[in-house]
Length: 333
Image 1 (cartoon, rainbow, N blue to C red):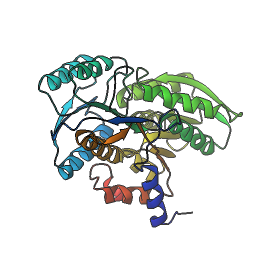
Image 2 (image 1 turned 120 degrees about the vertical axis):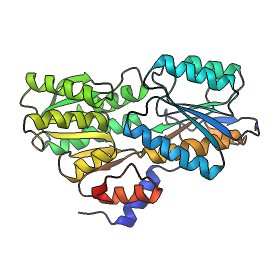
Image 3 (image 1 turned 180 degrees about the vertical axis):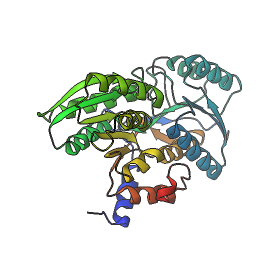
C-alpha cells in the first residue's frame, strides 16, 4: 500500500527533526560557546568522491547562504595526512568554527585537540572523533540503521536463508555501529545465517571485488546487506555479472540517487535513507548557533527512513522539497 504523500512527508520530517538526544539515550548539553562575532566556517569532508558527501556539501552550502556564513569546503580525499594538514591550516587562519567529517575516528582526535588549544570551536558530523572536546556532534543513528537493514533483509528473503554483510571503514564509529546494529538484529531471525562478513571501506569498486569473491565461495546466497549505498552499487554490479539481480536481495544505507533508482527498478529491495542534504543543512544550522554563542546539545542524533519500492517516489519528492537537486535520480523527479 502506498503511504499518502502528505503523511509520509510529515514522517520523514520528524525523522530528521532538530530534536537533540545523546547517542547514549540521555539528553546532554554541551553548553554555550562565547559568541565570536565571526561568520565563517571551514568544513573538512572525508571525501567528495562519494555522492553521499557531495550531497552533504550541497546542503551545507545552501544553508550557509541562507545564514550568511562564508563556508570554506575542503576535501581530505580519504587521507588522514591531508585531513590533518587541512585542519592545521584552517586553525592557523583562525577560522570561526572548524567542522570535521573524520577520515578515521582516532586520527581526527589530534585536530580536535589542536583546535581546542587555539580556542576555536570545533564540531563533527557523521563520524565522531574519539578524543578532544566538541561543541556538538550530529549524525544519524548508525546502530538503528543496521537494525532497520537487518529487518528489511529478513523480510526480503522471507525470514530464512543465507546472507552476507559488507562493512564500511572499520576505523570509523559509523561503520562499527551499523555493523553492530545489523549483527544484533539479524541474530533475532533464527532461520537466517550470515555466511560472510567482509569490509569494503564504503567504496563501490572495492565492494564489487569483495562481492565477486564472496559469490565464488557462496554461490547460493539469498541476500546482502551493504553498509552504504556506494557498496550496494558494487554488490549489484557483481550480481549482474552472474544474472542474480532480483534473485539475491540487496539492502543498502544512505538513500543516494543511484540507490533510489535501483529500488524503484526492483534491483534493490530497500535502503535505509539518511538524507545527506538534510544532514548538511543541520550541520550549518548548528554551526551558526555555535558562532552566535547559543547553547547547543552535545549530540544531535537523526533518524533515517527505510525506503522500499512502495514509498520511494514519496521520499524523492521530499528531497526535491528540501532543494536537493543531486540526490534524486531523473527517473523520480
